[in-house]
Length: 481
Ligand code: ARG
Image (cartoon, rainbow, N blue to C red; front, side, top):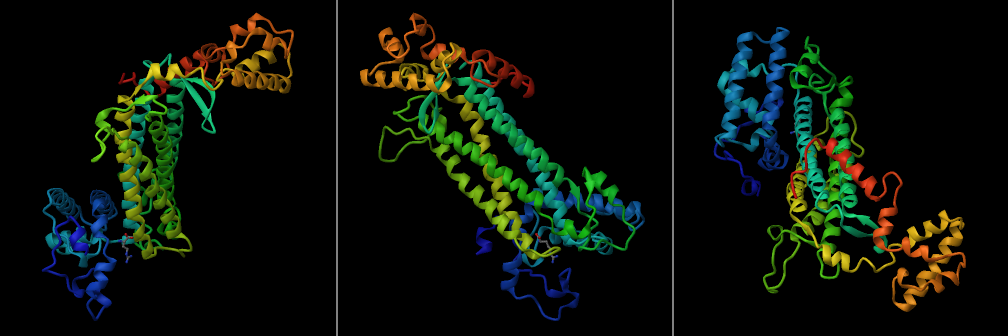
């Protein structure tokens, strides 16, 4: 089963006997083949190979520095690890599930090439601190990748602002028309959410970026290692201060899974919104056809499948987070083999969210708001009712009374099937006889938008200053539209 689904070159003919296993000394009997299949992780952790080699090189250099390896041995190890890396990258590396995981594979290849010198690499190291180091290096690199992709998407939203500057959209609460907003206000709302995601990634990165190596199996080592030296070589910000804690710690991985889930949630909300906007009923947006697909039976269909899948894939990213939370529940100190199960969900979340982000940015840049269609129905839904109420408040009417009065006016307009600005002055004066012709100077969607002035509001000046702020923050001129 595994051999069928695994894309790697598996060496089934030449299985390692128990005496060849790195941990085989105490065993008198060979491992059951079913157990080998059940316990292997190389079919998925092979993607840690580069981090594993980086970690091993730094470890070997430190061992040489403290005198546990000779300079010559260290150089040989470095050279051979570089060749093994090349072999893996060229698809020439042979895998054998009897060797369990990527760590054992690389070490075995080294021993095959160097004999006793290769056997020294694992000095003062356990796979427990090794795998934790590798996965931290992977998380660190993956965080940087997701952060870059988020930035691309933010720039895509920012890039729309100039062209869409004067477009007014109906804003909704409870999916009922609420107040008018400028289109760029919408785009920058997404920039804000994605910015928080980037901040969360940065925060998570700091906690991931602590060196576990040197914790060895769980208690540390009696050998004279220099952990700060390894941390320096690998770019870790600090050295984990408690070997027990760090052997069991996967907090950083759960945090990453959470941030990825939240990014997926943000994308899902946006996808849902644009799926609705692309319907005949809304008719707000034209999606780039290159990002849509058709129906095999209905010739007229241009479906927003990419957006639907972005929304749909959120389910598995959230599921992965839940799986990881349950995985670590009740685990005693320190390393437990359960932790091997941390990799597939986090790899999947990263792959899924990266794929969504890679498509989201060009989709955002390539879509087009349907100005006429949006404008033709802006007069519906009394989008100017709240700013009209605020006009009454400015004239001295208490808020509750103003709210009630505008509510009555809306009811009248609904009965007459017209806008607030279509009601005759008599209707206004019958509710408040101090009202005069000037009411018509504040009504209407354009005037409503223009009247917003609070910080962070959709008023044109506020929006313009936010666009300027984002241009500076995102460090680039908008690259689309
Ligand atoms: N492959 C394991 C993992 O991914 C690391 C091996 C630890 N095994 C052990 N017997 N200590 O967690």
